Length: 231
Image (cartoon, rainbow, N blue to C red; front, side):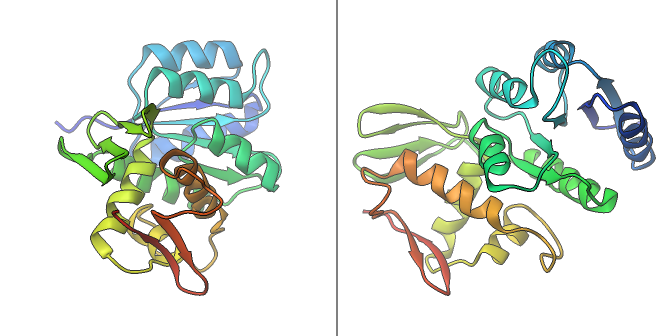
């Protein structure tokens, strides 16, 4: 008997929470839920989940705080944020606190299921234990998601490592749309917001570049995409 992947949904609006629970049960998931931020964090830290869906605005503590605490506890836990506003600040805040992806309210249920399914699939395909060396000063263990960058110990998310590994294999500029298809595993990118790619690239640059404003490893080719260089 196949074990169903387990989700944790932390959402304080009862109607939305009930709808999301029914939605993902229908799509083959086992679902646990909380409407309070502190209780959601406690459950997230204690349980094992294929993915955690976090609303931003919650009683007691925010989704951003929960996301940050979960990421400190586990680098590999898949997390999706539900943001009330599709603003640059909300998106940056969520991804900066360690979310793998975000969906803005009001959202399409089919899009949310698509993103959760893609993230769960990707999380089951972690890289084998190896070192990704970008230069004598920058190296990353793709299994532990830890690295050294100019003598500083750096934590990476699984998504960041997957982006780097994919770019390294291509040895050419890669567009945002290609990254969404190949790394995020989205089948149709026509209507998807590509800012999540830009924000992840900015976060990676801060970790691997000595000067993120003048990158030498992760370079943007205008009109073509991003390319990773080993120096």
